Length: 77
Image 1 (cartoon, one colour):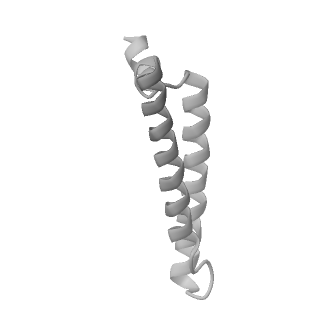
Image 2 (cartoon, one colour; image 1 turned 180 degrees about the vertical axis):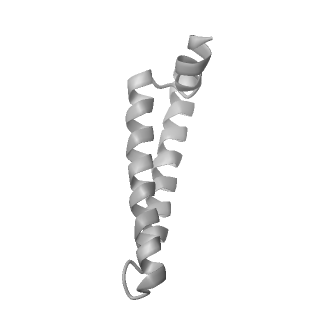
Image 3 (cartoon, one colour; image 1 turned 45 degrees about the vertical axis):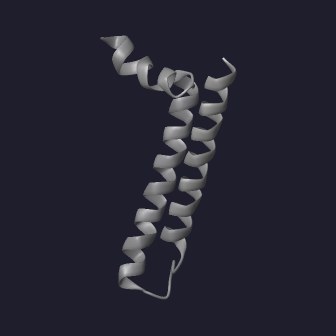
């Protein structure tokens, strides 16, 4: 049970628990920041004009790189 909750997903994507936790925290904090910027932008449209879209692009790029690396690691294993 604990293995499934804690280790299965990181192992499936070729990461340790710590690596996965670090990436998840980093992405989560970026998303929280972008969400806050969106709320401010809703009230003051001249502020944070590209913050949300830039953040989405950054996260997509990071996720794509991680997926590609996991696939390469899987092929060489």
